[in-house]
Structures are given as C-alpha cells and as structure tokens.
Image (cartoon, rainbow over all chains, first blue to last red; front, side, top):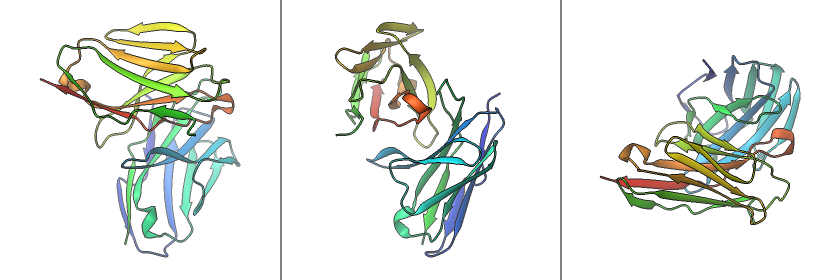
Length: 112
Length: 110
C-alpha cells in the first residue's frame, strides 16, 4: 500500500523558533511536494523536489526552505516561525512521469 | 490570473441528482488532469485522471476534457451524501510540478 508519513499530526511552536516538518514515503517516488492549505486559499505549493538534493520553488516559498538528502525523505524548514505560518501542511509524493500524487495525513501547525 | 480556476461553491445538489464540477485552465500546454476529493479534515485523494479529449467514465464518475476550450469537468451521477467533499482539479504539467485549483465544495443533501 502507498504510504506517505508526516512526522507530526499536530504541532505548536513559538514565534521565532526553527521548525522542522518531516515527510517520508515508501514508494520510491522521485517527486516530493510540500503544500500549505488555508481556508479560502486552497492548496498552495511551497516547494517541489524532483530528485535528491534538487528543489524548485513553488508559489509561496518565502519564509520556508527544504532539504532532501535521501530519496524517501523531504523536510520543510521554517527558519523563524511566524504567526502567519499557522496552517495545515501537506506533503505528497509521485512518480516522475506519472504525476498522480499521494498525500500524507497532514500536520496542523500553530505558531503562538 | 490563476493557472487553474474553480468555483469555490458550495454547490448544493439533492441526493440522486447529477453534480457537475468545472475547472478552467490557462496553460494550453497542459495535457492531462487529475481530480482529487478531499473530505473535511482529511488529505486529498486521487479519484480520476484524464489525458485525452472527451469523456472518461469510472463508476458514477465521469471526467470530461475539452482542450480547445481549456476546461475539464467532473460529473457525479446519483450523488450520495457521502460524496459531500471538496473537489480539486490539477493539471499534470511538464516537470510534474503539481499545482491545484482552489477546489469546489460539494454538498449533497438527503
């Protein structure tokens, strides 16, 4: 069975903290994605990675960075968390040439 | 202009009716499309993939693609309350960068 696992379901962090959101997939997928989802704004792409150590900015990369040191793991980093980064974060993965994505369960991050 | 546009809804239909969900896109290079369903509080799940003009049917679901008019639609026949969810359209773009429309919330009333 396809599986994308995010490290936390709920997370509460303080303003200014460095935050790591981890995502692991067990399907040997080349592509991995980080999205955030907010009411009324839909699903917005933050970063996309198509291979180890490779990344591309999505629609809203500001305030975020990513790391992909191994094929199965894609990390989203909030260098200095701010309250406007309170959101639902979704990780997804897909095969390179067949873009159907499978999603993790999501991490609801609250920055206080 | 956003790459993919969807009416946010809510679209309300009675149980047993046909629900019609539409998506327009701006990139003429988009060759294929995905439809995802997202229940409240859950992650999106893939329900349909269409890559050629015309209709593709899967059970109660039919996806329609019209590349000349740049729209893709999803029809749900015999709508059930369990179909109540947000439906997201996504073009399968070159480079596999997957971006989504804002989604249409469907409500099926018993």
